[in-house]
Length: 202
Image (tube, rainbow, N blue to C red; front, side):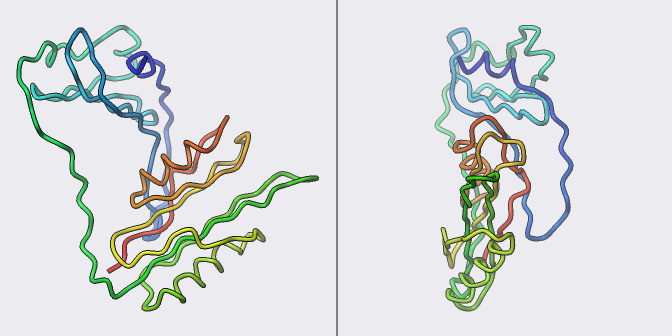
């Protein structure tokens, strides 16, 4: 049950390196659930150690400790209001004159551990050059890579599983969070790097 997963969320502190080509992401579980007969939209921020609950009656934030103690967002439960509000994620406008590319590869290990590598190239005047440099960046780790995404509008991000995971994986998406989520859905028995690479084209 989703609400029980909220109470089990662990608080992990993360540090991020500031880099123009690195975007932050984290593990977030979100979705609709019914609490005591009231529909609420919940978002669990695992690394931050809290969850938010929202509906037409407002928004409530509860810490991991409060949730483990059995707390619920009682300020917005019950709620007799209805809302047609949807969540929109703004996408930067692009001229379409510049290209971005993402590359990824996995080297399956036989006598040694498998390795994963990714690369990105953003704001190139030609698609071919963006693909070439994304591949070059990815293959620096000695892994055979292929281009997995090209775009001349919007954004593209990519990340990999972290060391210590049971298997290696990568994930990409139009936002840092979607790239992380995509990677996390593929890796088992581990986690993904919240420091994604990539960016938005002009």
